[in-house]
Image 1 (cartoon, rainbow, N blue to C red):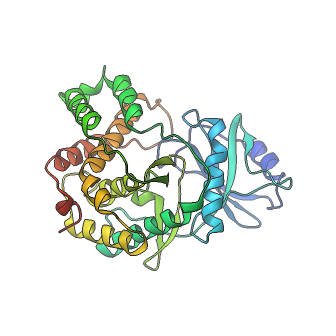
Image 2: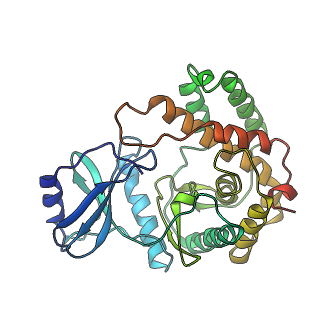
Length: 320
C-alpha cells in the first residue's frame, strides 16, 4: 500500500455519492507498500479502504483480482469484499485512476511473528488453497521466472549500487533457476504475496487476508515458499528461525495436503521466491519517484535470504 495519486475532498465526495455509505468523516493515505495508492475512509456509515490502481496494475486484470476476493469472501474466509455501487459495479474511476472501495476488516499485522502466529498463518494459507480449488479465474503470473529476467535486465545498470556484486549474484541465480525450476507440480490461484503485513490477527486468530493484487495462477507450493521467505526470517534477513518454519508448515498441512513432490521442490521454490522479492525491491528502490508517500523496502534483506537458501534442504526448511 502507498499513495501516489492524491484525491481531493470534492472528488471523494462525488465518488461516495455513488454509494449508500454516507459522507466522509475521516480520509487519510496509507504509506506502506509500493504498488497502489491506498486510503482509509471512514464515513457516517462505517469504515472502508479505498484503492486507486496505479500503472503497474493492468486495468484488464482488475476483474480477476476483484472476483477472486469476492470468491474467497463468499467461501467465508476473512477476505475484504469489494463493494459495489447502487448499480452493482465494483470497479470505478477516481482522480483519473481505476478505483475500488473495499470492506474494512479489523486486525493487527505483526513484524516478528511467533511460532503460534506462523502456524495460524500457514493454516490460513492452506484454507485459502482449499477455497480456491473451484475458482475458475485464470491469470498468468507476470512475476514468475520470465518476469524475473525482465526485472533483472531493468535493474542491471544500477544493481551494483546495492551493493557491488549484486548484478552477478542475480545473474547466477537466474541461471540456476532456469535449469532447476520444478515442473509437473499442481497449480492453482495463489496469493503470491502473503507477507506478515498482508495478514492480520485479532485475539491470536487470523482476522484478515489482504492485498491480492499479485495473485495469479502458478505452482501452488510456490505460495508456501513465498510465506517461508517472508515469515521465517528476521526482517533484515540475517537470522533464520526454524521454529517459525516448523509451525508454518505444520499449520499449512493441518488445512491442505503438502505432497512429497512439493516438499522436495520447496528449496528451489524458496530460492525463486527470495529472488523475486530481491528483484522487485531493487527495481522499486531504484525507480520510486522522489516525493512519493511510500516506504521503500531494503532489497538486501532478500539477498541475505537467498544466500541462506543456497544450502537449505527440505528438512531445514520445515524445521526438522
